[in-house]
Image (cartoon, rainbow over all chains, first blue to last red; front, side, top):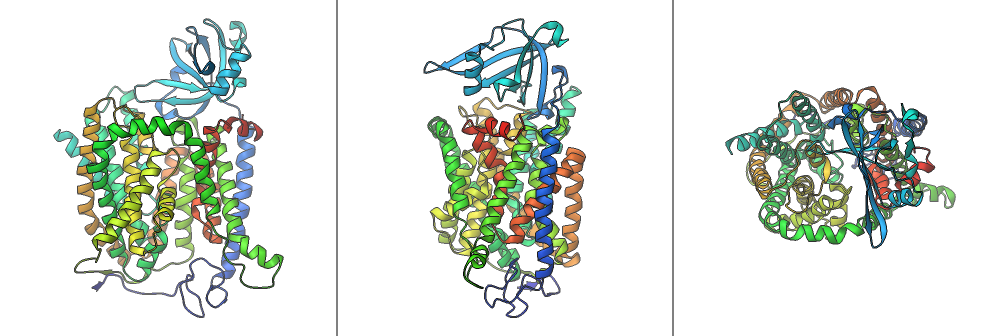
Length: 176
Length: 442
């Protein structure tokens, strides 16, 4: 065996009294002595808690007050996969509704915007709610729909609805 | 075919070198390459699948096998190696980091053999049926895993001081902080899933700043702040003394954990390792390291391979999800190409383990542990800023503070996985949008 590195220095990971490895513990589990870095550890612990809680609260306030941007379908790129966007356009064909054991399980329709197409999908509860509310848009209807983008390799773009409230059927003039 | 082989070797070599940098995850590097490939495609220069697929597989296999080097020698683990840290640190502190790295890599190689020789031929027959059977049950399996993960963290302490509330709170401090970490990271996950502050143009990397913050940043920061110094590392001249039984036991546990994590959505290699460790009662440090090597490799590589299995088409893990944006495999040829690339990449990466471990030990001699961590920290910050901008840095900072909590309070870092486990488990149960509405995010 050949040593490959040079110096060994004392580490805060070791108990200052019994010199056993204690990792990040503030108190040595073998002899109950406080760790050498106990004071600094306390400060770091508090800082992590405060920063974590305050930072998350700030992110939450920022996120909950943000508006979902309207995205023209032609501007959607594969790097926007998983983005939360709004799309406004015309329903191009009759919606497709799939049922499983007699219950609505899946719903999809095609939205066009300046000649570009995007499939909007809704699963289970969302699809069921839309059908029950009679809020499924027919061919030619103008819709304002928000959801999460899902883009696969062949360039197929989908927008997934999370709730039925995220779909609004509009008059053409209203949407323009 | 030659182009595919060259792409595999190049991907593996690139990933092998990058894997030696602490804190640099292959998915972060892959995201940059995917951005480049999309930019090329937008200009009408689409890259052929025979180059893209083997290159991506080379990157993944190289990382899965060689990221054990910084995990053991520099203690900068990613989310799939949560358990390598302690036994790995023991080896490092005993000056046997080289040995620890090689044992882990041997586990990785054994996992790769199991994947190519056993799972590979059987997968197209078995996995589509297994997928059909498990799909309706995934949500409750995921909730069970979360419960087990939280409940298996036993309270530490509570043995000193006055009896009563003080001793009770001392006993529950670490566990309580673990639960708090899970809750905070879960809330962060909800924010990122439903109202991400990350710019839309980089939305495919929504979760990346959070992962860097939760798993990479705390270790790098602590390395820099705590002036950690590694003792001299020895390079054994002969065998590393790994017997067949240790290898078999570790590989079995690792493949079980890694396979479970790869097949079920959201569950990572670390969680799979925890379950397999309990299931197979893994105690010995060597078995532990072998199992982590195997688990990590199987988790990353099998997750990517599932995309190629004919008749299955499951997207598991970041690599598959990013690759799917460029190419959708459809034929048996694609599957066989992927399998061949895995074998070639595994062989190439394993040959690089010894030289690269010695190179990192050499670097440790020239530059202190602290300076290397500081350099890695700067690289990670630049990467997050480059891909996701200022908002990415903000998310990373918040995630970093949350990720520091388990490290500083001595609870499991795995609790940080709440960032994906909680929102995804809620989504799979159909409750995600309702919870998001309660939180005012929808």
